[in-house]
Image (cartoon, one colour):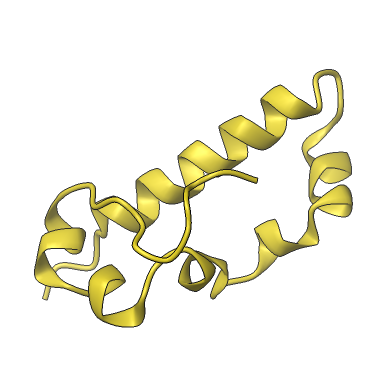
Length: 72
């Protein structure tokens, strides 16, 4: 079974880039101190239903969130 997950990978890249852009000059430590949800393993499930996030399609390609827009 392939372990790489495209949607989860891009989800974290996007949100970390967004957090960095919103906190210019702040260290990664400072960013996650201000946004501790970025350390939560299940944080993507606030944006995605379990069935959508863990689908074969989401594993292979980018899939848009179905619960709320992707932004901090």
